[in-house]
Image (cartoon, rainbow, N blue to C red; front, side, top):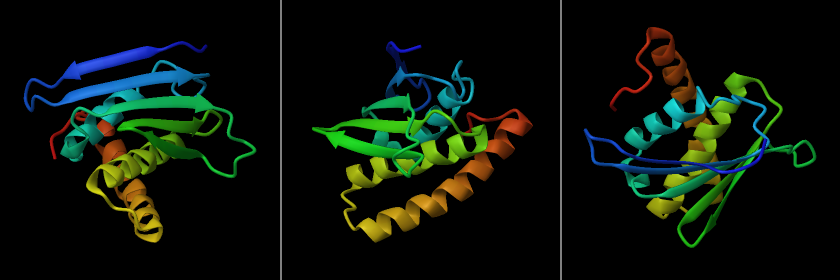
Length: 142
């Protein structure tokens, strides 16, 4: 159920530091077999994420009219993800919200530009992720 799971990892190839916390009621990908490879892959695609602290909190967002949203507090990011959706939509949502983390770190503040890019990347990158997972190479470099 709840609780914290901290993943602190240093990628030997790139020396990137990945700080990922998972909290909440994990009903989608409960063993994080998709979440961890996906986040590692996104850290490689978006090098500006290096050293970022990101918490992914699975929670019922049924009344929020959104599958996810991202909050930033003094350089730490909290991503709330709806815990009742199919796995493909979940992957798109993680990509969408981590794109917002990257945009914040890049200083992109225009709301329309942020959403346009996040929707575009969630489609493109989710397809690439599933293709790589299917081929057995989810942890590819850029």
